[in-house]
Length: 147
Length: 257
Image 1 (cartoon, rainbow over the protein chains, first blue to last red):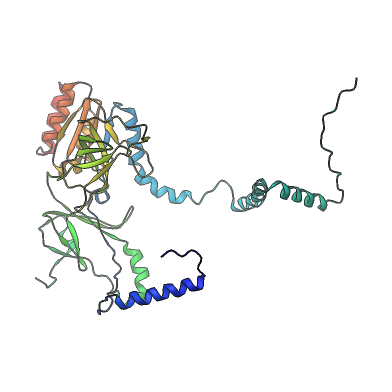
Image 2 (image 1 turned 180 degrees about the horizontal axis):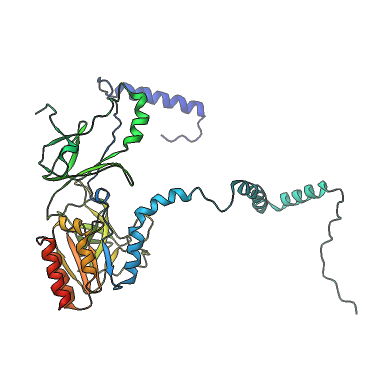
């Protein structure tokens, strides 16, 4: 049933009532639960992982250069996966630098999404912090050239 | 018989097994009593792969095909693996296999592709790299397709796709013009796709050519001239029954002429 404005409490009550009705009608087996054995045998119907077969498209002596590039790429994929794990340890930027960067980054990007009023407030706050408050610049108006 | 009489799996490696043979796996600690130690034991063993031709049966494996039992010891890529190396010509679609299919029908948004199995596989026109509703791939009836199975089980119609999980073609799609398609047994395909296949290495010394091997027993060859193409086709077909020496003799004669 569709009832839009229901208190969360009444909702919970209704749910519990529904569950009670269901559980009485539910049939269940009187058998003891079978313990799920940790299965360490995986059934696999494909030959690919068993025998480490190569990629099916091949080209020799430069007949199809794209396929030859692909061959190198695909057949070294199996070795690449092992190297990838090691690469994760090296990083161009250290963790501390990243943290510092992010601190300032979040602030600057956040300002972008503030409404104009909030931006003004921020600006005033920044200015109040300094001991010297610069007088706000007068809006630049068009200056009529004097003859 | 209900009694679990079986032979230890490792003793049978390289020998003939028949359907119904039970293979016992090396004993592992009883899970109920030694639950605390499972952590160390499981990490050491890794997961055992039960490959084609074998099924789980209790704590061991049962063979469902006749052939030679193969074993790959644990280490490197994955855990240990057992499988039965059997021979057959008829292909059964398996998820993830790359196959060569022939387009037999084009119905609206779907292509029907013959992959050599018991039913035609379906291939959606969107399953190509860079295909959109406006930009349809140019597939005609009779074209050859190299794709992989997305869905392949005994209860559903098999589905082919020509892109991988990241949306790239990586070599799949329509196979070009010319060339020659022929069928061999599935065992030969696996032999040719093995990491260091002598047949392929020897052939690659002859002259430039292109080769596509489908796990469904189909091979497509293309070389510069028709004669060169047919030579490769004949060698690959004959490889089934030739010994290594006979093959080397044949190739020596060819490269001589």
